[in-house]
Image (tube, rainbow, N blue to C red; front, top):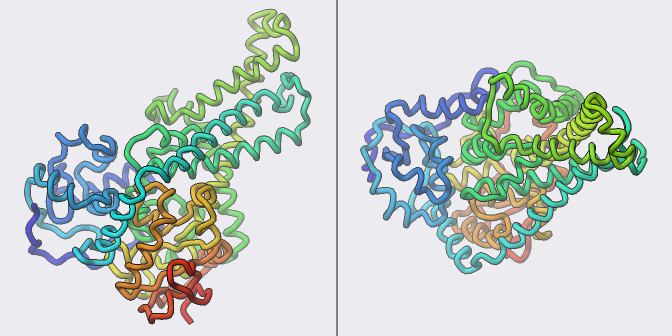
Length: 502
């Protein structure tokens, strides 16, 4: 195993980029940038101060080979620590087999995982709780996700069958445009909720439910890069690639150019970005594939598989309306009806993709990081560098969905702090882990607080317009009276509602 380092450990994150804050929005370039910093590793994986050759372990990795193939030659310390609640066994029994040598340069990230520190103590408590609970709670997460996937597929099929006759005949029920608009929006909302539910599963070891993200037009693979490996490990920093994904449409960093201080302008720009981003990528995917510009793995085209199925359904609806003899009377007419069926389904599926994007974008960006009272790199105080304490400083929890049942949590990125602390733990377990979090906060004299959705929503737009930096931390030493914020009395804590320092 790695010996003690003979160099000074990094004390802060890499400097913010002068334009986007982070690095290239190209996710593969972001992965390459992590390899570039660790070029002296020569393709080995770095964990803390040790370099490991995991090539023989890639196909044995219980979480799936993709996690390791994507991170070859880079520092995976945070992912290694946060993705494995049973860290002691892996650290002592598995990792030493693949140790090669020590690294002789500082880690790019300053975050720490000190034995006996906040995160280490919290993880010990959580491991005991998870063992006590067993596999039972996750059955409900599976049920909601499976039911939502079936509902989404059924709604897409119904939309193809009863869509309006905009491009020609084909609606046997003669439903008006209003019905179709309503069904399109409803289908998109179901799809958006399904993407958020799929997000629960893509953090885990490879499983069939992670593809639910893909069938609704998103990508679990891209999510794993920009969300699981980047944002979850380094929220609100230069290593968080989700920031450049939204620049220059959104401006989170006061020092960056192109700032638009008008809140209405920011709000409209954000919504327009959501409306056009996912639908545009949906429409361009087959073009990029045909031209050889971008050919992705087959699962990235699952939403197009839904589209082809919808075209078949629409053609069936057309023959129900007109009769098969009319539709198939000649090759030319069959091609015509096939064409208008394709135009109709692609149009309605584009609307659905836009609604999915609006849902996931609004839910996601208001979920727990981007209000003006939450730390982001460049603020005028240094956050704690213990991984757990850092996540508390860069993340907020909404009381609106706390202890309100599982469905609100898995459709709105709820229980956000615990999800950041233990991303591979199923959302169904989070409500049971707040007691462990509260006890650890009390042990380390750390305040834990809830905010609410309204505060997060307004704070998000205030942060886009602000021109100064936050000067004070949200959390102060525990005074024996509670953690401030909104905290459930069952946790033995209480306090007044506040989201800012007095």
